[in-house]
Image (cartoon, rainbow, N blue to C red):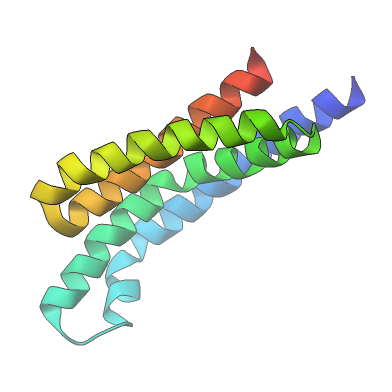
Length: 127
């Protein structure tokens, strides 16, 4: 159908744009981090977080589009159930990983949340 073709094209574009933005963020993370502070330790923490943000940009793009597709289909019950499940997984990761890895553990837990979301919404779209 036309809607499916449009959605597929939008998913490809979100992946491409996310990949481009991720590469740009990764390339310029030292400059971005130093624009927030002159403290070297703080800049290092910002750089570490930006690495996760950069790597997740393609996934975030897919999640954004898939979320919109499922919302457009008015499948609100599925969205609610998927978010409860994904948030539970991410919260469990935050308690276990975040407790031992500090700020890096928080970024890892957010990564798990987004990966779970792309899996849940992708399954709804493709299966």
